[in-house]
Image (tube, helix red, strand yellow):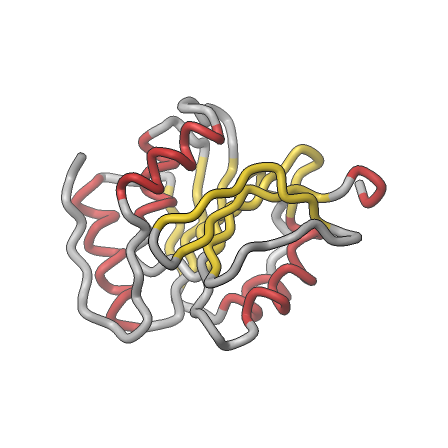
Length: 169
């Protein structure tokens, strides 16, 4: 319920509170023991929200320097010691990191092809029961790799929970 401060930055779209409530209803209110990744973090609000719901840890990845600094300031204000905040490119992070995550929050910049690139790399970063929250400018559909099992729309934003198809686990 605390207000986070963040700079004006091109493409920064904080996830509306109504959408966050829906997503955490989908995920279950208690994330005890789960490890989370907030990729293209922006404000970091999804990662911080996960920690407030007892997630074990969250890695918050943000490339834009001013936005990264704001996330660090918010981490300090919130005393979010279980958050690891990284200032780096999302694809570089996925290439270098070997950790498995139970929940991934994914809200890449629109109209730049990030979603397709990231979804190719994400399977090796998901735990067996892992799920991915995706915000996009379009509705996602099932594929050979991913199954959409929850979805909705708020304004021009489509949001989804997806998981790996069982044949790929």
